[in-house]
Image 1 (tube, rainbow, N blue to C red):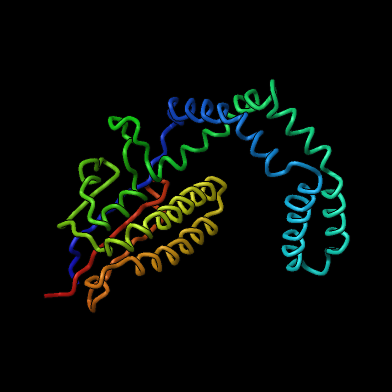
Image 2: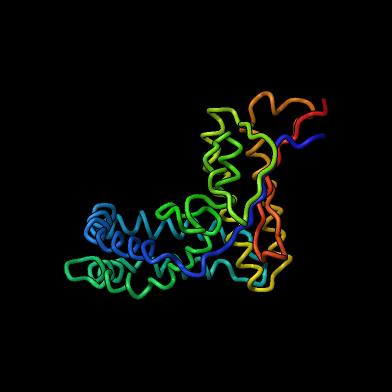
Length: 264
């Protein structure tokens, strides 16, 4: 069956997080200090609320999690320690948020100290892109987003193809107009997660886990794509795929989107 159109894009990481992205993150977060403090005090105004909304809620979920542990763990003792420790932690919690978010709190300093960790965001930018500077080779859209937009018939990505992208055929939308718009964010979210985690796994020499991450993501994305297809592309002989796979040459994830039509 002939390919009506096909897109291939390889995720490429920027060497560093763009300075403007890092600075915007820091300044935006620091500006939220007073709002974070007010919201915490509103949601947890006293010890009773802390007990109900944090301590008991956390312990309940922790106990659910421990239902699956093996017999060599003393689950009852672990659950008891968790519940007792959290139940009496209100004063320490209150002191902590006062010191961090109250007037003159250390929150802005901590933001500055942790800024280098935020540079891991470059793994996300490699998959989705960054629109602040279209002249940047990592600007506008990167493969995970490009592939989805093309499935919606959006021609804008074609203007930004670079050495990491290729497109052949005649672009057409394969998605239902409404369903495609609603399902697009989920496809992008799964694609980004898979690309980031696969790269992390590869850097840790965990190639089997890397490949399993991509396999699992492809299964979910395939279901989402099938939900979003318009009636024509659900027809006999049509086949629309969005596939993530590891590219050993590029040392990163490759996104391949194919729109196959029935033979004429």
